[in-house]
Amino acid sequence: MSKEAAPQGSRRRILTAQQDDFPGWYQDVVAKSELAENGPVRGTMVIRPYGYSLWERLQEELDRRIKATGARNAYFPLLIPQSYLHREAQHVEGFSPELAVVTHGGGKRLEEPVVIRPTSETIINACFARWIHSYRDLPLLINQWANVVRWELRPRLFLRTTEFLWQEGHTAHATEADAHDYALRILADVYQDTMENVLAIPVLTGQKTDSERFAGAVTTWTCEAMMRDGKALQMGTSHELGQNFARAFDITYSDAAGTLCHAWQTSWGASTRLIGALVMAHGDDAGLRIPPQLAPVQAVVILIGGDGDTGARAEAITNDLRRAGVRAELDGRTGIAFGRRSIEWELKGVPVRLELGPRELDDGQITLVERHSSRKSTTPLTSVVESVRHALTLAQRCLFDEARMRMQERTVLAADLETALEAAQHGFAQLPVNALGQIGEEWLNARGVSVRCLTQDETGARQAVIARAY
Image (cartoon, rainbow, N blue to C red):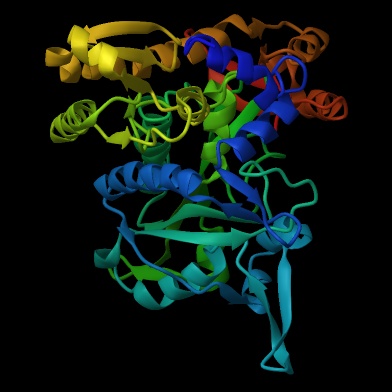
């Protein structure tokens, strides 16, 4: 079997085809690319090293952008007194079905049950009430990297799990306008920027409807993306909390005139769900396709047999790439068949594969395979670094353009609910808000589709984005 034929012949045996069973394909990719597996408790997951390396890259990119907005990292307890949640009625009502409650500890029944955090508004705001005294203490901008637990009835790895990893930001401001501006800054400068320029996934940003907004929030802003099956995925949210939590937790400050005022607040979060988005937005029937900006390994040099000279040259090329800032790895496992190794790296979505054997060394060239397009070419050994850099730049741009084109082609401008419902079976529908209304939203929900967000078109008219969703 030729090395070109090996991946094609094995591909059908490895993964379910997307067009046959998209959920089955997703489960196959997550498992066989070694991203994650189910944990021993229903709804939990074990994130394997390759999957966690993606999360570490996402953390790095998000954390840098979050700190650029002025926020600082802190950590707050996993266990929250149950009484804290009851201090904000809408909040506890929204989360009650998902709460995991601890009633015993140290072999004894607890005097007050504690909740495993579903989110940290309550415990962080109890701290804010102690930390904030004067307008000089504002704005207070805090971010936390943590795990949370929300009891999930229909779990799916990365997309909906009982326990997941995320970042959650919490801020307090002196004015409503400052809180509003900061919530939108997080949405655009942190979330949208990371999703589009790192994950290469175009997103629609807009406001959630009243029925979809975060429990306890005044306004929820969201980033929504289209997956390859046409469904929407909520990628991250930023909430204006008004003074709801400030009043519940007595978060007050003295302004410049000495008047006691309640703070205005925001909260915002993005989670390991983004890895699920990566799989479903870019993956194909051969596995993952990881954008170079995110990829833990951007280029792999695969050694194809040969003597010590070939191995030394492969190692030198790998080191050259690393010195040039490329995250490169050498696969010198010549005891494993080339075809098997090639399929493995293809499945894991590494953007560039470089294949080097005695024949290539004699010809003074190396074979370069671009994962995003499956295009195979040769490049002189003397210009490998330049060729790889060019291929990485091209891959990042092409993956984004492909996803953007898909969203544009599968978005229908609808004038009525029936047309919007039909369009939402295959992609997105944009419906004028005045043609929706609360009754219209309920009618759509009863038929398995939802209003993902409210946006504005080029003329400034408000549109409702309607889709089936994960």
